[in-house]
Length: 407
Image (cartoon, rainbow, N blue to C red; front, side, top):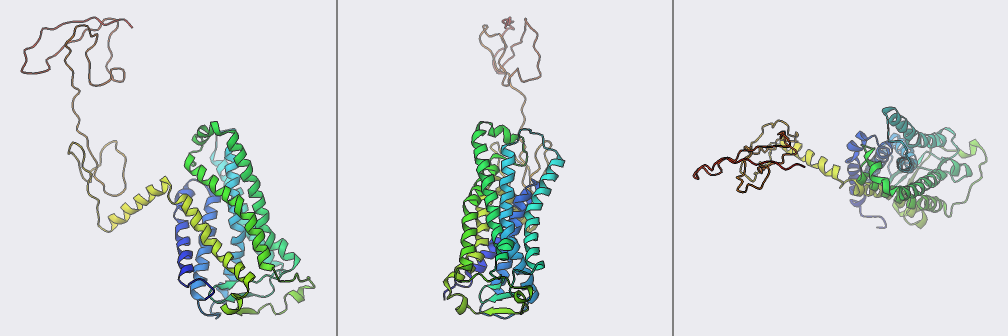
């Protein structure tokens, strides 16, 4: 077989769908709209490709034409939405690195989210609308490739480059500019980096650097992949002249049923198809590698494990303290609430022990806690202290008084 073994791609596509959604809750709470849009586009694209690869494995039937109409349009939008989301991430990093005021109000956050949604959703919807409403790009309804599923049909005319093909490259150029400016601003203000991060409660140093790495990879990969995919998809296909509306849409309801032996034996078309569908799981695993093993991710994994284990009736063993004292399933005043039913350790409290002072040269008796941090106030300049018995078996020594030194 020229294609990959059948279980391979569905497994990777489904894992990409699940793993990309794992970091979504804490990015959503942090108002990272560009990152959330990136996760949703990638995850849903992996889900669509997973369904296509399972339903159309080994056949070219057309059991769900409505699904093909929706999925082909969505994949075209995702090919633009993922680069647009990456551009929003780099744009946010640039604004953070160049911010001069540390005050960020809720209104500013709403404005930033609205602008990001205009890029992440507005541009993909515009591209899908241009393709479907103007009807100058699709030659027929869609194609069904064996072992691949529904595949959009694009007529190789000049309007197709302005309506569909050029957008990933144009957005990639904008993302390249933002990424370069972010790196320059970060280098110039590297000494103020910790102070800058402290002003953003939803963005710590680790998350910023991981977003910076994602933006750098986006800068290096979007433009070359966009140009190469545009070339490989149309190599050997002549540029057709746009004659008329009727000529382009003649036989528009036709659905192309292409077996694997036909499309897989064409090297250029096979590379275009395989690269198009494997890019979505690749983006999913790249994102999970950057954000799925972070500190906040591990904390959420632990909380989820404790919650699921408590629902299943499993309770972790209580942690044994060094003094042997512990309590199970009891709330401790002043302690942080923990997930699940972990036992709370209660330390033994003992009264502060006074040490016996042998020498008369010491000014103040030595306590086992710091007097400067305690609530005890000592008179100055004269401090009279009483030396008490240390060992009950010894005889009580006579009381002595010592003057404190002036500081």
